[in-house]
Image (cartoon, rainbow, N blue to C red; front, side):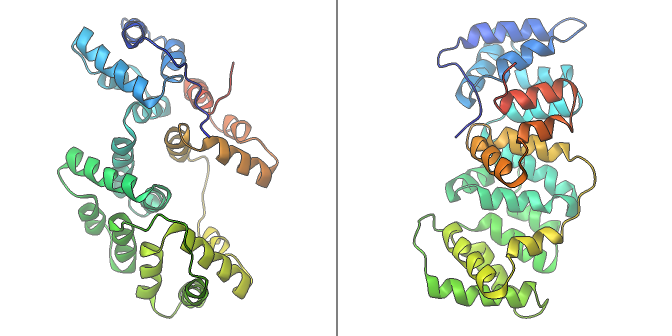
Length: 284
């Protein structure tokens, strides 16, 4: 359920030549950059990058970095990377951000499939000559270190089988650890880092039914945000535009009675806004 609108047949050579024309000289033709890159899937973008380098002996990503700026540049840069490499970059930025970025590590580890997380770990190692878990461990301590390292190293079961009795007992363990702020944190970490997504959903549902509140509400109340988080907007749109952003938009509207693209449009501006809305499927 992607939002990206990409033509089936494209010419990477023609796209590369059009981009080179748009990026050369004194001024950059941002409209052309958005019109091309905002309507090409991951395979097409990689073909454009390959053709650009073959024709002009230059890395297209580096040219884009030098010609664009601000949030627009960061969004285009991340869009041009292959998914695993992009998530490796996002993880590295999150680690450098300290406590402000830890939720990004959780997001990457929990939203992606086990195979995708493994691909991110490989990409991280190739790009930074260090392991992802090494950097996470170096920059965290205590229970947080245990949780984050556990999340990025776990290869979860990806099936749909659920153990209802286990869900109930582990909901009680989480309740002790989160709600009462006591109990066995190691056991809570074990549950969160090793159980499958479907098993965790069953556990969270038991938590809500047995303890009168959702665990997500408990966690949400612990997070305070100030102002617009452009980095989060970029991360979600760029990472999900080719996967399930259409579903995310539908859920957002059901919960807020506001279209996600309208909410985003009110918070950002300029070429960055045009590019993000293009990836969200909004047509001119």
